[in-house]
Image (cartoon, rainbow, N blue to C red; front, top):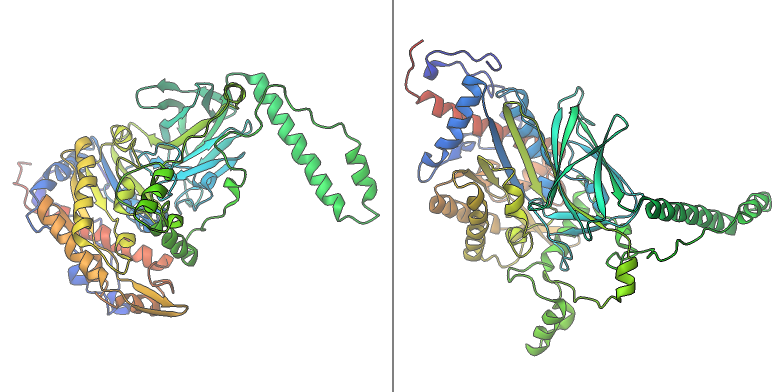
Length: 548
C-alpha cells in the first residue's frame, strides 16, 4: 500500500497529495481558476492512463511512464523536474527509474538541472536543430561521437539531491560502433560490467550488481594495445604542448623547468593509426554553448537554430545550394536547413587505419519496482519538425523500450517566435509527430501545453508584445479537439497577452521575456502538477463504490 492510501470506498478516498497551498495573493496576474486540464472532447482517451495509476495507487503494482517533450524549457528540466519530484515523492511515492538521461556536457550544452554529467576525451556532437546532421538521432534529439581512446562519461543522478533518490538496477545504452570495434563498459565499484548487445535496437543492456545512482561508462577498443598506445601518445603530446606554451612566456627563473621538459623524448606516433577521426572537426568541442538558465545565450542560440530549420526533410547540402541557385536565391542561406553533408571521398588506407569510433544517442535507466518514471526531452531551440523521422530516425525504435502512458507536448515556443506564424502548418506538423508517438503507444494519453506569453525583440533593448502566443494557443486547442487530448492553458493562466512583463517584474521571468527564472519554472511545475492531480482526483471521485 502506498503513501497512506487505504482500500475501501474509492470515491470517498482522502487524497492528501497535491493539497499543498500556493499563495496566489503574491501573483494577482495569475488566473488560478484556469489551472486545470481541459478536455474539449472529453477525457475518455485518459482512461487507460488513469487505470494504470489506479493499479499503482491502490494495489502497488505496475509502472506508469510519462514523456514530456519540448525545447529549452525542457532541456533545463526545471519545470519538468519539479513535476517529477512531486509525482515521485508525493503521489504515489515510488519511482520506477529515472528514465532517459544523457551526458549533455560532452555535447558542450547545458545538462538538465536535476542531475550532473561529466566526460573525458574529445567528443563530436549532433543535435536535431543543426543544419548538418551526420549521425542518426533518436528520442532525445542529440548524439555524441568519439574516437578518443581516453573517452569516458559519467552521470550523477543524485548530485543535487539532499538525500539519495535514485537506485537504478538496469541500463540500456543506445549507441553503436562504426566498425564493431568499440564496446561500452559500465564501471561499478571498480568492477567492469559488459552489456549484452542488442543489434536490432543498436543498444547494450547492463544489469547492475546493486542499485546505483552514478553511471560511469568507459569505451573499450577491441585492440587494447592500440588504444593504450594512442592514449599515451595523446597524453604525452598534450603534456609537451603545455610545457612549450608555458615556456614561451616564462621568465628566466622558469627556463630551467622548460629546458628539463624539452629534454624528454618526443612522443612516438603509433604506426598505421589515424590521429583524428575523419568526421570530427578539430574545433568541434570548443564551440561553447549555453549554461543552465543563461537565457540571453539560449535566446541567441534559438534565433540561430530557427534559421537552420525547415520541414522539407533532409537533403544533401550541395543540393540545397543548387536549388537556391536555380531559384536565383542567395546560396549562402541555402544550407541554413537540415541537410546531410556531401560524402567525402576517404582513401581506403585512411578507412583501414581510422581510429575506432563510438556514437551515443541516449541512456535509459530502469528498475523493476512499481512506480512512476518521468522522462523530459528537450533541445534548446527545437521546433516540432526537429523530431521528424528525417531528423530523428531512431525515435520510434528507442521508444519501444519506453512506451509512455502519458505524453505532454510542450514544443511550440520556437515555432511561434517568428514574425509570420503559420498555425495551419503548425497543426499539420504536430499531427505528423503525434502519429510517430501513437505508432509506439497507441493508447497514450496526450496533453498539449500552450506556449507561455513572450515578447519579440525589435531593437537592442526594446521588446514588443508578440501576438503569436495567442494564435498558437488556439492551435493547441484545435489539436486537442482533433486528437481528443487534454490542454493545459499555460498562456491564459499566466495572464494572457503581455503577462510576461508582469512575471518579469515579479522576479519570475528573465529579461529576454521568453524564459523564466528558477522560481518561475518551479511555480509552473507546481501548477501543472496540481492540475494533473486534480484531473486524476476527479476520475477517482467518479469511480463506482466498492465493498469494504
